[in-house]
Image (cartoon, rainbow, N blue to C red):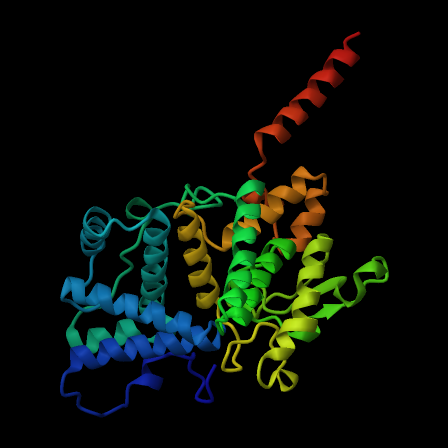
Length: 368
């Protein structure tokens, strides 16, 4: 609530009383978006980028209809959905996201708490209505709506990929190119993503001080545990933190070698906290990781469906195949629900055959 007792985002807090608007329709529409932004940033604590993205989507819908929120109808939404699906080929998850945004905006402008219905009645003789209903929106019936082609990388693909990344280091050194440090860094980045089951953003935001000793694994030195401080946000929450235990010694060796022998060669590294530095001393960004992964993937002729996140999928799958407890893996990768971890798991045929053999042997033995 504001000091005036009005809800944050109320019409009276956005529009000035007694001021004549030169273009009232446009001004009120923009005031609605501004008020909605305040409500999301204040009450829901959403990130500015998320708020701006939602506001721009509503503007796009307004441009498509060539109308204003107090003129919109369910038929306008149906026409827009047809355009998005038939002409722009938007995926179902994208369609559902768009509809959710429109539903939230309509909830806001139709709520009496924010006074927009009365404001529109006074100015335009009509008021906004909710245009998103069960019968014209996509239902969220499954947990995973991503590209069905997205899959974990096989062990052979990962070995091929990491070997190629290592080869780029040797090639740069042999040819005397200045990109040797960056190539070594990138090769280690991919090993870290797979070795600890990380997301790109989590990896980018790692600092040198995020590694800790684990008394249960003294052989790993100060790399026994990894504190992930920028886990995936959920519903306006701050980044979710988690502690990831190191389970792949070879990945620990790779990161330790990078920290001791390579990172120190970057200019100003002693004054920087970022684990992955750029040539200019900045922090390596997620987009940089994605671009380098795509370049290596294409050079190897691997499928376009593979992205850095597939290394995280592979971590989950291979840990399960190697006998790790699913609950342990769930905690490692920061999934709130076991069903999410299950969606990441794409066990190999050999693993499934071994499980089948165990079940059959147990059944045959109990029947004797």
